[in-house]
Every structure is written in structure tokens, then in C-alpha cells.
Length: 287
Ligand SMILES: C[S@@+](CC[C@H](N)C(=O)[O-])C[C@H]1O[C@@H](n2cnc3c(N)ncnc32)[C@H](O)[C@@H]1O
Image 1 (spheres, rainbow, N blue to C red):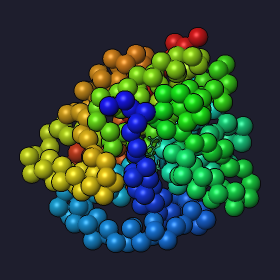
Image 2 (image 1 turned 180 degrees about the vertical axis):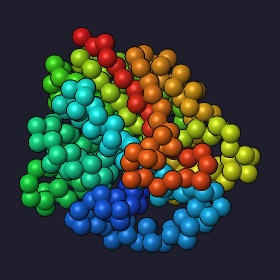
Image 3 (image 1 turned 90 degrees about the vertical axis):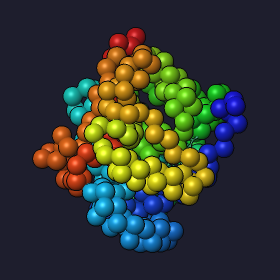
Image 4 (image 1 turned 90 degrees about the horizontal axis):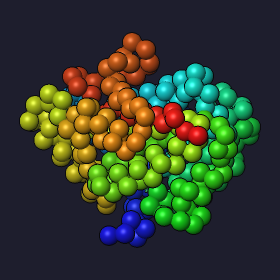
């Protein structure tokens, strides 16, 4: 199927749940509150407890782990790698852009999402005093036109290092489909003096027992059914994840395990091997 024809708007409601998670953990201002987000968040509380008790992990834990690790890596990219511009794709109701433009007033931060979600985010940000990120529509599967990655990247300065983020997005697509996007992104990042791409993903193996794997698969199936877009497990382990991204011409790829950050960042701990990983793929040999 040509990727241009993929309609992924059914995924957008998941941003309400994640949005409320950021709010409930003091990562977002009260203006980010939505009635639906609060409703979903509270309705799923018993399942979150169950996941925590049985699996030693749950959605809330992995969301906070990935979000804070990405914040940390983005700070590092700005402070030590000269990143002056950020493209956040599938931003949903994430408050990251707001937090970063306040901490780094010179940063050019553009948030993007599918047109309806982008309009919603823009309306929300219009109600906030002070600096806020710009918002633009995108569809990662649009091959040309106003919604395409090419058009959005053209809004940035090709003489400056850039960071690109996708949080909570790639898991909704099969590996072949998302790989096409990763390949295009990697090619385009080569046009900047340096590019860094941050994303979350979820390896299945890494020593997990069969019952735990089964439970993760069931949770993924339920999420996919709710989002009407099957959730895909792309990789067996961290090494496979790294090798796959390296093969797409990134110059350096690191896979961050939340366990390495337990003593560094205020993140909740999983019992055993955490479900989430954060990918940091760098393109350092641009023009
Ligand atoms: C789970 S939410 C994550 C939102 C935000 N990044 C966060 O972590 O709170 C997934 C987001 O992906 C967006 N999305 C779905 N399909 C997309 C596409 N084809 N291109 C860009 N964004 C898309 C949805 O609208 C939604 O906002």
C-alpha cells in the first residue's frame, strides 16, 4: 500500500492519555488539562495497578521513563552538541516544547502533528502567555506537499544542528512502514551540519520470561485495538534496534535503557527489565 494513503488519525486520542500523564506528574501546566484525558487516565488506573503488581511495569512508568530520558538527551544535545533547533513530530499535548522554549529562549522549536491535533495544540498554546513553540501540521507518510517532512524541515536553518523527536509514535506502525520514514529522515538529517533523532521503542526479548512476553503482547494488542492501529514489536533486543538504525545510515546509534538513569533522573523504576528504550541516532557528518 502506498504510505501516502495511510490514515492514522485514529491514534490521536492516545495523546489525551499521555497528556494527562504529564499533567499528573507536574510536567505540564494546568492549561494542558483535558476532560477526556482525565477520564481515560482515571478509568485505566486499576489496569495500571494490575500491570505494576503483576509485570512490575506499566504504561505510566514507561511514559515517565521515556519522557524524562528524552528531555535529558535533548538538554545534552543543546548544551554540548550545539543544537539550536528542534522538530518534535507527533507532539500531541506534550508540554516539552513549552518547557524547552522557556529554558532556552533562543531555541527554534517547532511542534508538529496530524492537522486536527496540530490545530488543537495551537489553540491550546494560543491561550498561554509568554514564549511557546510554533505548531505546524505534518503527516509522516505524506511524500510531498504541505504535510510532508520535506516541507516541515525546510522551515529550519540548514546551517545549524537540529534535533528531531518522535515520542509515542513509531510503535503504531509495522517495521517496514516506519523504516521508510526513518530512511527518509536519516537522508534529510545529512543536510544539516549535525542531526540527532530521539525516539522510544520496545524490544521484546532481553531475558524476559515467556509469561511476561505474553503479558506485554496482550497489553500491546489492547492498545492497538483501542487506537485502531495495531501496535508492532519491531525488535527482539537493544542490539537489533541499534543495528537496524545503523543500517539506515545514521553515523552513531545509542539505545538508552532506563536502568542506566535510575540514579540520575527522577524516574520510576521497573521491576526487572524495563519495557521501554530510548533510541538516540546521530548524523554527525553532514555538509
Ligand atoms: C501516543 S500519542 C503521543 C503524543 C506525544 N508525543 C506524547 O508523548 O504525549 C501519538 C501521536 O501521534 C500522532 N500521529 C499519528 N499518526 C501520525 C502521523 N502519520 N504523522 C504524525 N503524527 C501522527 C497522533 O495524532 C498523536 O498525537
